[in-house]
Image 1: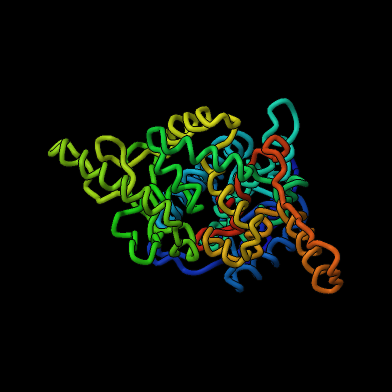
Image 2: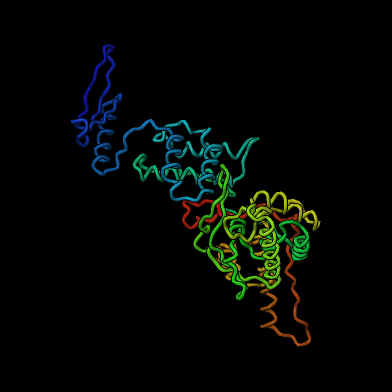
Length: 423
């Protein structure tokens, strides 16, 4: 280790600082890291810091790898091993569209919190501004990647930690849901149109699309009147589908079904067996799926939402801007309005906690609070000559609710760094 003065032919002076590291057995010599400075003071300061980092095992060798190069290496070598397919696809798309164009070519070790903050500032202003949730998705992907870079000793700290996200990032947006009257009209139309039984099940059960599309007939306990959620159906990019584990630990659950829904499923089972017998070898299902298309294939979620679901909405005279996922929201909202315990609703939804349920469906809390106040009044201030208050907890019209899906799962069970949850 040393600081050497060097004088160029022109007379200019620079100072070369060198720090000797461990012995390189492959090269047969000791590793050296060196850097030039304009002043002796700067050279000695760098030498002291480098010696400290080498001794503490935190020294990072300078690398020319870019952020984009490292991101895709991390995505292929690490993320795909431990994350779900949907998460990996979301990370890749978010980085490619919203981060890579701005700082993807910068060297990984040169990225600073200010660089990342500048990217987010560009994303949320201007004619092509994106939604706060989009920024969050990009941030989650970048933060996860840089977190691994720290673990792999590529950078000393994670620069994505010390940045500010859009102001509304932490706010829970309201969700869309049917009113009781709309729900009844929807169910009536389900009985008349193609794939109506799967849409009916979606509203009654409150399950996620990937969960009910992965159901097998063996998951239904006819005697107990329940269905067991044990897997999810995934359609990755590139075609094909496969089963995956439930989204979170709490997602594996048992849901009780009304007698009417069980009767619909029995009739559906009879029709499916008749179709299977009629098609014979042309029946393509290798699994005993509850819900299939007319050839026995798994139902494609996107087609279910854009074709069958929209057809039912139109037949029922309901707003066409409802989305397939709003059936899940509708189940939870109607149960809360009916004064069902939030704990029971959380268990049915597969939420990680009651807090998550109440945060997600906060738009019904004022009605529940008003009802609780009336109940307390009847208990504490009884009046025999006064009829009990008949508080009607009505949902606001669908047009007054924000068009938004569930907010972040926090962090999913098994999914890192606050990836947005679909509750």
